[in-house]
Amino acid sequence: MTVQEALSASGIDAREARLLLAEAAGFSQASVLAHPERELPSDVERRFLQFTLRRGNGEPVAYIVGHKEFYGLDLIVNPAVLIPRPETELLVDLALEREFSSLVDLGTGSGAVALAIKRRRPQARVVAVEASAAALVVAQRNAVKHGLEIEFRHGRWLEPLAGERFQLIVANPPYVAEGDPHLGDLGFEPRGALVSGPDGLDAIREIARHAPRHLAPGGWLLLEHGMGQEAAVRALLSQAGLEELDSCPDLARIPRVAGGKVK
Ligand code: GLN
Image (tube, rainbow, N blue to C red; front, top):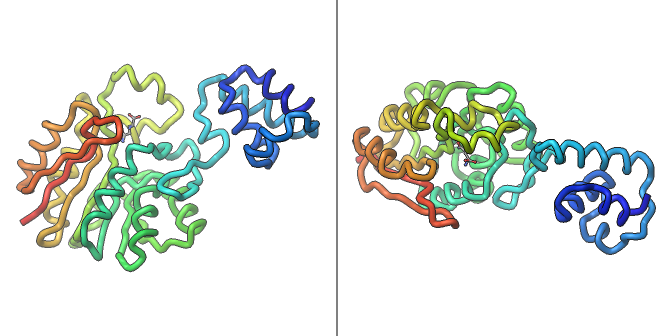
């Protein structure tokens, strides 16, 4: 079978088919486009067929190919971790706008946020916390892959940080409400990384409550949140005693990151 024949027979979106064929064959996508007449070895053809069947079944491309780009880093991903989202790059941007020499990323998942920040601030001490042991393995592999030194801690939110203070705390916690119809599209991703109680705010509530005692004077907490949660998250930050509350919209103009500063 030729490249062109395989692509036509795939039955999936043309752009995704090119990407999956490039991954199955070990070619670049440019080379897939440039040589439609190329004959595919039978093992490549078989692998591509497997990929297209998985994609046809709804599995995200990132899990099929095993990696995903985030903030210029190619990250290893598997079903133990949430697939890094482009809107989460905003959390990294907002962290990098601030001065800090110590930072912790809570619920690091693939390590995306911690690694993107560490790459831009190599002198800063960066700690990453994760409750899922399987996710922590992925994050550690990503740190090794990119040669970035992160201190990893296994545990829930701020629990493994007793007695420690940071100048910046960031998190992209789960924030989808139980029973949200949107979850139907996210069935391949770890539920614990997505869902957080009846209103989606359980994790944010817990983080906001405990963050002040882990912030150095003048330190900031920055949290990604869901659509329509802006007011509730700001109220939680305010209840926790944080000040100078700030909200920032993502590229789709949806308020996406809220932050507050400790006195
Ligand atoms: N932004 C993700 C989504 O709705 C949810 C990620 C999260 O809960 N942190 O697809």
